[in-house]
Length: 598
Image 1: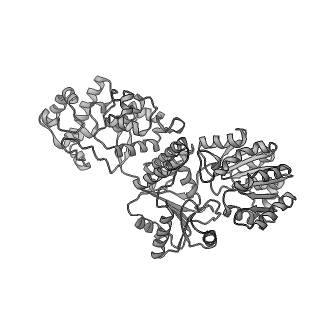
Image 2 (image 1 turned 180 degrees about the vertical axis):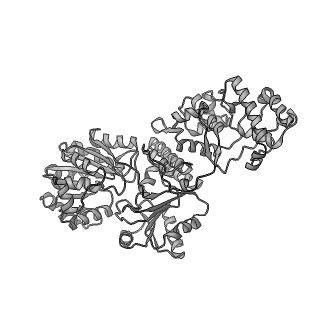
Image 3 (image 1 turned 45 degrees about the horizontal axis):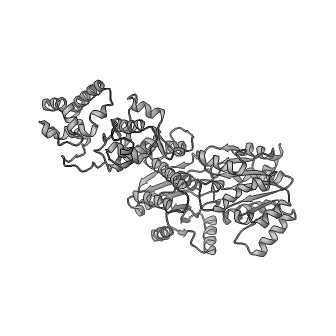
């Protein structure tokens, strides 16, 4: 038995390591720096605690939350490991005593906050000691693109200068590619090896609902989960209190938790949650990080999280014991507005705001996804999987509508504008909006300009999100959110692949002095399938002659108008949405001939 396996067995009582742990431990024992991305419940703490026991000198763990320090240090002490912590909830005398013990070599592992560590006097005293390793937990906090709630984490980049001989190890549950690069560059000048463990949590079921009445939706979700522990994430402090009150009135045991509560009250709520198995915590994001409760059976969001990373971390607090657990995310347009406002009201840099806005858009793409939720979630972290068979989309596949022409409109606009613009600009081009930006770049002159004017901006926003979530488009964060066409998206553009989208309920055409563009229902479309087929055949014939995509002639929505109103003259056809003077002159007679024969 190797030394690390013996420690694992003798101290922690485990027979084997979890996936990825042993490789990280051995890398650290070779005195090489590490950045490890491991999902919640993946066993991050063992990866640095075992090397810390084997190193000749001491280890310092920089941790963001009091609860996290208390949980881990108390667990280590229970295992007779010489560990201590220093944080703001301890008296000055107790902190001073812990510091003296560490300086005297009586403590092997010291947990400390970044604010306390990075004081000049503290750094000076530490430089007189021999520190084997610094561990940065929740390392995404150091990134300029990561969570911005602890600015002091930024100073940790100086550790490599102050302690050039020490190993730097960093751990977090989630970080996209750019965030990983940023963390690694700051902490190790890019020299740390990045370990990227699998993000898939097969025991978590995923569901998303458009928010109509969160109270009734939440009760429906909780009815099957009575007497189970869970977390309901809310947007604001006020929301946590109203949610907890509502759940108590509905017969559940629930308490609020937010950053505005007194320390003693927060500690009491945390203690109750850790010891009781039927308590629901209604919380802001202030709750959960470092809470090592294995049997959280569900996590619900009654408002939109801030980003895909935040969402992944928050649902990761369910099912840490590996047993089946459920998640539910409710979202609405008001949530999106609140999140965007929260980003842009921040005092952070404009570049940071842009990046966070794009991450929020990725989360919205997840919400709008028509394919397996797990596939969409993992694709954000550049990971693939088979359809899970138990998310809402797998169990109840959404109504899908053929939308190849719509997709080609968007893809063509993106292609013809150089794949260098975000969704808002592309929507302006497709809808024919004469914005200053469109005119300045002469995008009102391209063939795609205005081809989708019969659909609303809200429709196109959701449609584009679905193209992103289905991986026909990608958002290039490094190019300020530019939409770019993937290989499968190019297949749609070339007409080699059909596209189906999830039904969008607010496809309201813009107001024009024309015939009201009623939506054609499935029954009408079925009754008129022969006429519709004839119209589409004529459209394809004309498109091939002109060597343009079919929608350039007329989009499906305009063909639907022809089916509904069956104009008998060119004057009647001119009143249909999508039939302008030029198109009427070019194609009116051809389509009128088919309609008058029906």
